[in-house]
Image 1 (cartoon, rainbow over the protein chains, first blue to last red):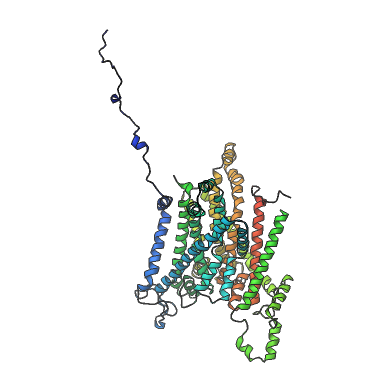
Image 2 (cartoon, rainbow over the protein chains, first blue to last red):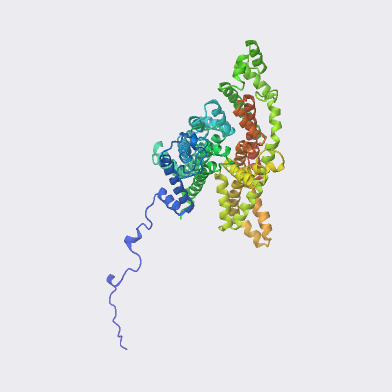
Length: 312
Length: 312
């Protein structure tokens, strides 16, 4: 028998070809590197409701900035000859009992609501986070005193504190601001305290500490980033309730006073003359509902987006 | 348990004491007086002193304070400045009925509809049922209650003429305020029930029950709903707050003679004794409700037991 096939005398490397594994690719990062913030933003973008809310809020912000200057009327400008005019080309949303332009007044009022929103968020961050963090980090006596203080504040209905304060001072934007300084931050302080208490005994903090991190580094690089999600979510839920509080107080006559326009004042005005001039109540009501719904949906969306458990 | 209850009660007494003291001194600082200043100045000095003596206003503030505290411990809130010759306590008691009726009706309506909506939404997850329930939940939290009340009054009361617009005449007068008050309750409960139910549906014991041949209805009722209802206790707090806040403005809009409208009215006419009495009343109600809710946690859910209970 003759062997027709060539016999391999030697197995050399060049006879082989690498089928799958490539050294340079095995070490390659498959997904683009992404910070936690970017990751959350991507998830938020997929949430249609939250995205719509964001657009609505931006639109309302733009109108609040440019709305009052889009026509020549001022929010305090009265014109008794043109009282109670229905919406028209001249007065886009009509005029109120003193002939003041409703369009200008509504966006002027929206400015107040947005100011309250920014203020609430700012106070939450400044006072709430600071007190919560100090309470948790210092512990012991400081924590004890701060917690007793907070317990008493929580024991009193917020509204009562606000109403008493407003009775003491003149009703107005300053008083509402001060009332919020007293009451607005308590919830945030409690949440941040609980979260930091939980974090500060975890292994990664201990590891960082034993590697010689300073307190400053611990706080800035480990504790705050891990509390951020909670802070943002709570802030987003504080904002609509602050906006509601201002509108509510103005509606029962304890908030802003005429001729200043806030959405609560406008709705109260419209409510008085609702029977014959429904448009006076309808438009400010639409604006405040839009703001509230948008903030609430956005807050929901953020809660889902910032939750690391949702990451795929 | 007893020790815990005792500590809580001590805490409550301290809180109420602080509120009473704070309101008393705040009231003394308030601008404006409940009396007609012009008429008062026409009186002779002697008559004026006599007038002040009638309300105990002739003594120094510190003495007034101790006198107020003394009568307070006897359950006497003093005489109203505005409703001449009427005790604040009897004024409050006389006004409790309508408010209690509205509150109880709103809670019953809110829980019933909220739980039903939540269960339907969970069982028809990701269908139109689910989406519309979530829409109701978002709108219920977002629409300010005074806006909803005004819209309801306009469309149902004025346009359709189905229900009395305002005033407390017959039972039907309580329907619209009840619906308005329950809106927030429905929203909170529907959302909560849905989320809890979705979680319960994935539990192993639900599968076990189904596998052993329990009927669909029984699975839902005996194993599902019961386990969903337990954590409902956790949102009772926000619900009570929303009812208290809501009663202030809704009773005003619908002219209900309850304690909410009494509060707002007495603020408008500077009736200090009534304001103080109602502040204390609201605070006491609030603090006691919170205590009951906290105790309910322990009773309803055996997994949450108040710490310190075992140590006895």
